[in-house]
Length: 558
Image 1 (tube, one colour):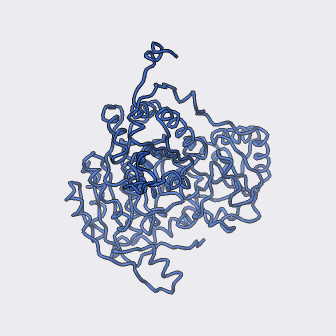
Image 2 (cartoon, one colour):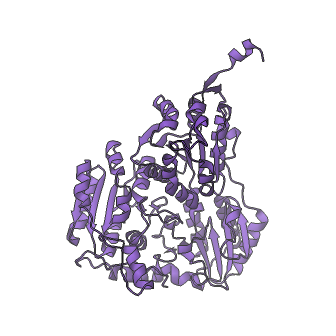
Image 3 (cartoon, one colour):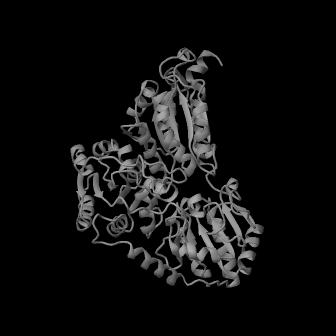
């Protein structure tokens, strides 16, 4: 290529090329904190009004916000951090995205080449550090690889099973110029899942037709493909009851006439007592998690035949041997079974779902005790469901408070429940809720967690106030580690140690931040406080002082 030809090639900086690649992917929010080696990215974002940059108070909070945004929007989300401690601060939330199959792309800085291997400040071999908790981690070696790296990061993150990807570059690379590559996503990744094999659908239906007591088990794949309505139509046509895996209780609304509710520890007794009777289990869009199944027979009968469907082949047969594994889109699997059931006139109405649910509801309400003082956790969980609108999103933290909310959360619509799937790190609920609210601004969002978890990322309340993100945070405040108390009671002879501490008044602290805040000490105050929090249209914290002795079970009980 001669000089005249080179002058015709359009060039831009690596940072600008990176941001333009994000725009082509439809990215409209980036979460993070500026630092030395990602400032070139920040500078390019400054000139990109199409992307809203959310400056957070900690990189962990930024990554959890990206997690919440990705789950609520069903699109990949982006977080950025500088080198060294900026990257290490991301790790808890990126690991949560890895275990929860959430497509979060981290775009980070790395120390400049002249500083590496010299014990320089903030120098770390970051790719090996990130590799175990991402699907792909890559240090961009030169400016010509920037755009290709973004393309691969999104391709990998969105390939089933979805998950996080990490790319990094130093400022020396991001400030260099490179040729513009305006490649659209459709040119480098497929966006349509393959349909399930027809012969396998015939096999699945044959097993279902021979069953006497079949059940459907639904997982996140139903949510990811917006297939809840189709799943309801399949259940209604066949009369087969439906239970949900614990991390996706909203994949099939628990208020549906054929819904048994979520399985497992802290799940619904109606599901835990019905599913063990099943002789055929059809798991749809499912990743079997430990809290739903305990990774042992009991909730599933050892004699039951399992048909396991997943969009990701790697998920099939991990925990239980299957009679049939089927891979392909969740929508095509449901449609295939529905078509065959319609042709055959299949009806398998063997379980009295209404009776099972009514019996479980009596047990639940018996523990509510609305007049009890100190306030009972079950009452708080019950009141959250009562006040939160049906289309509202609830985000539960790990720990004792979150377990109670799971037991009392009745879902009416898909996409209304989130927890930190298969990672159970306390502290994520508040920033995850902020990300979810940014993704779904028209929906009320409430997060619930214990005092330890809320304190972990309480600084993000300032982010919420500054960015006007009106999320309601309910603190189950028992002045300590309720979950660990429960374990010590169950497994260590009641020897309670290192679980108690003192808290500030979280409501007063919220008001210092400029948010709405209240502390609740009596049960009669709670409903009004929650309603005022939502009516404030501000970020809000409701600090509820609860009974230390009201502990959710830490072992499975049928």
